[in-house]
Picture 1 (tube, rainbow, N blue to C red):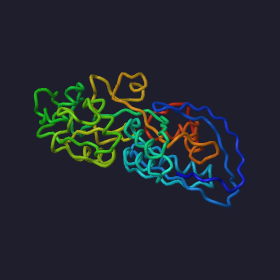
Picture 2: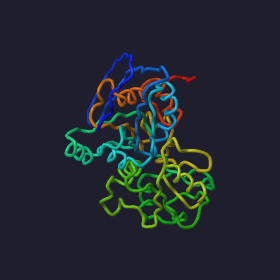
Picture 3: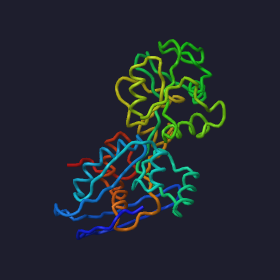
Picture 4: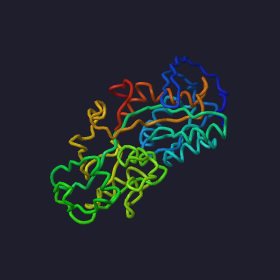
Amino acid sequence: MSFGRYKNKVTYILVALIFVGIGFGFFIGWLTFDSGGGGDTYLLNIQGSTTVEKICTLSAVPFMNTHPSIQLTVSGTGSGTGIGTLINGQCNVAMASRAVKSSENETAHTSTGIWLRQYAIAKDGLAIIINDNAIGTLDLSVDVIKAIFNGTISNWDDTALPDVDLSGEIQVVVREEGSGTRDAFNDLVMGDADQEFADSQYVGDALPMASNQMIFDEVNTNSQAIGYVGLGYLGSGVDTVLVAGVEPTFDTILDTTYFIQRELYLVTLGTPEIGTLTLEYINWHFSPEGQYYVFESGFINVLDKRDDVI
């Protein structure tokens, strides 16, 4: 994959603090591109998680406003697809809502001789949601949530469930295969990210959806539905399920009392070289301005953010 060299005169000051590894890494730095308004335009293609897409879509215009020579495209294709696209050299940065899998890393190294690098730009909680026709608060243990999603509990009238004035068959709504949100939920709740065990598999009539927003919309309009979404997709029209008495909030995720949580990543093929667009894009998302847009997207910033952005 070639990220290109800059043909325009570029003035930059770079201060980089780089921690790299399969499990963790981040950049802090500043790179100022020629803002003369003319000359070449450089393209960055960002693909992957529909969860992280919300951050990258919101941050795209401000990033391009401060980097007028760069044109961004952001596409939500799913974490697995995004990482595959990155390995195949068809995008510059992948978005992932779960950690890179060892199988993906091995594929990258076998195909290209280069290891993947992941950079956690945000924290997130996976909220279990039901329709807001429910009366009162639904408080469930992880074991009961798992039983609902694998079909062991299939009716809202089941005596294992608190009475919240919902009735009839439960409609389970999930993310499609290849989704990082699905993998994270399967790992943390179903007990097996790859769903190889029978009790970790979803009930046969579970509805697979292509995005967090589609799950939210289905639960919002279907009083029998239950699903899961990232914090940034919560809104009116659904109720949040308490997990063992704990509500998913910024505070409960930060203090880890709500444990169905994950990190959100930008992923690159190898460590981006100094002076590349990819390095600047990663760096910017760890800057106070970039972290502001993480917060504004409804997720949790991992570094200091600006209190306001003009």
